[in-house]
Length: 149
Length: 324
Ligand code: SF4
Ligand code: SF4
Image (tube, rainbow over all chains, first blue to last red; front, side, top):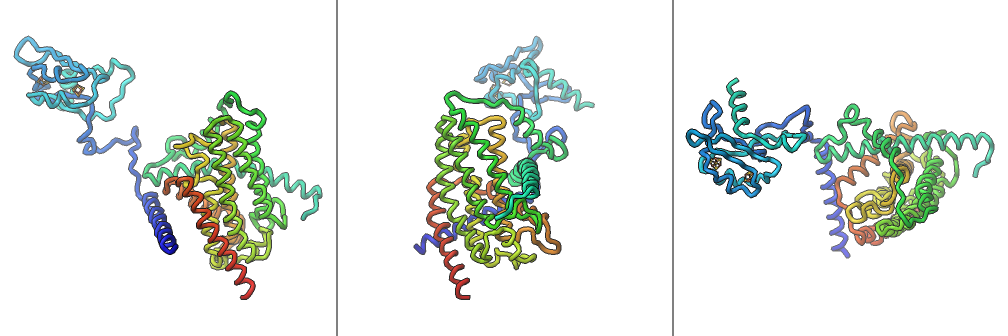
């Protein structure tokens, strides 16, 4: 009997504690990013896995890729198409189908040259499937051009 | 009770119209407050995009609800199916009549005001049963069964708590109960009846089917309980009456325990509204803090704690009043 009463009083106290916690949260600042008007701090996106991108080897938009096809073989979704170029080892096409990618990182881990990584493009949207068939070499070039500017 | 002259009749009609306005306005405001409070508690802004800071969101939602198709599943009991939302809505209208919003601002001055409210609030439960039964849906039926046992259980401590205040002021007339209290917080009934206030507050949440006691419409178990099959206006009427019920019990609470329309500096209906809305915000706060209880827990709280406590409280009040 007394035990039950004490237990229930403790329970009541815990209810008050709960109320105080939500009350404090009510008054503390919000965590929402109002997306089109605000964007997240890039620091928060450091571990975000967006679509793949090529790691630049230099400032001119060349890639580190040696066209060894390890990533193509490792990929469970068959998203990658790498075609070796005519001179040297550099690829002439590097196509990536983001619609099939499960972001598993098998390609990133298997690459001996460290040529691919996940981008942090959290705001990527597309209105068609084709827009998600990405040409990573072109993407690398445009990023280098932007950097140069 | 009262003479039924033309003037009185006109007064009641005007009061009813004002109350309908109040109910609709209350639902819109409460939806906004509820969603905003829920957002703030979860550290997000709540409705934000429609209108400045999302103020028009609730209006747009209600417009959407009005425009929706009323879908009627097969094998429903037509008459009861349509009767239930109407039965949920209109008695609530009546319940607002005896509430004293100001010294002279009462829809209908009746000596047994609180009896009227307690008696007619039972009709809301009937509408829940009818809704659950007639919609020929297992969730609906389960929700209805829960609604009944919950309403029966929570009505008793609620009445007991009110009864101790009635003992204290010696009248069933709501205006007189307010008149017996003073303008300052230490002259309110909550000071001499804190336990009754607490019991009333808990059973008020149970009575209005609000979380954590929202078992009749527990979304995760019963989809929406007794109003699962209702859409469009049918659902809107249930919704409206739910918020109106909340407002009603808050008004009763303010009248009985918090000095009604009396308040520091200047008495008036604004105090009534401020107090009622503070109570409603508290109910919303509770909803977004506590998880839903299990059904046996719900009934245990009532039969094992609230009921004995309220009876003891009533006894003590009676004894003190008799001998002191
Ligand atoms: S992350 Fe996985 S699925 Fe995507 S391209 Fe790399 S290996 Fe394929
Ligand atoms: S594994 Fe690396 S180096 Fe080999 S083809 Fe893929 S990206 Fe190029």
